[in-house]
Image 1 (cartoon, rainbow, N blue to C red):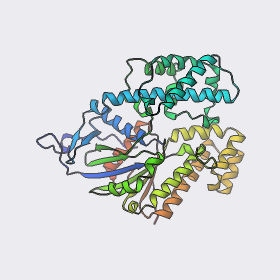
Image 2: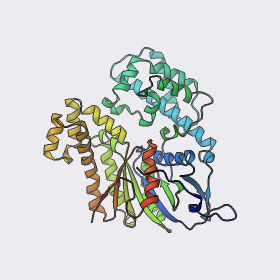
Image 3: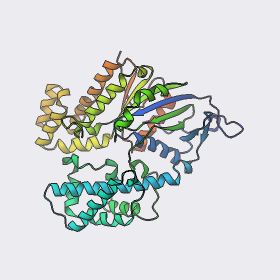
Image 4: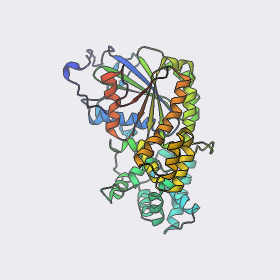
Length: 419
């Protein structure tokens, strides 16, 4: 995963007399794209958190109109208004999760202990959702007490424990961090809920990667290692944003420096149906979008990197489904077309070790994307499996760019020759 880089004084970039840093280091540009909800912004936020918590190794910058890089001090990387927005985002996501669990309980014919409270939560979410953009502006702290009471309901707890059986229930994996017990601390969710819905709660770098909201419009983020400037261009995954790709990518490729398309896909999406076309998975739609991107003539000038994000969630789902015959049949139906016949038979029978099953399914999923890359480009293509909420894995982005940008873009990534 790479060791932490410590910037020594003699390796620091020289600053000009006005405090702005010179532009003499090579610039590496990453164009970050992918469908909605795969964790693109989470990756960026985790990198920014590294700049807050380990400022000697990771630095965050603002770039002015003259392309001067000005370092942002750690405690200003996430300004108060942004932290407030993240706090409300976390609260909203938790409220939505409880709304979805209540709806699923009713769909399954299960009765909650306090149906009046459940109906109030449903009504509150409906009112907030209808307000559009205002949904993230303010969530009353008293909502937290109501949700904590619902969390104790057996019907809700049972749904949480069997969440991998009901993937259409749509609980954001970032939200699970706040409403599940820690393996070693049974009161974990109580403490987290009490903190998040308290009047004086302020998000920390521990919580920021779990604050998930839709990214609108393209955003630039600038980082620096000892020798490289790194620019991440984060684009939203909504359909309205994706259709802007061709024109934006042309502008993105202008200027000096090396450019990479960083395509983020959630490997866990292999088990969730696409909302617009139920006969295919969200990951299949993601593969189609990658195919579209690689068909753009401007991409021929870029290196290609694919991040299969949410690998922890992938492992959790496969582990759960592999335990039962019906679950193994579902895995085979979703992935089997890309597996060897002998491996597929073993998967159906359950004769593989769980580690083997996860690896074979992973290879089958990866194969779909590799086939697209081989068909569409002769560029270098790098594949990396990651969990954006795991800090050590995110460090590998910085470390690998610093240590070996020309040979191995991502530490421990697999290199695909597509010539």
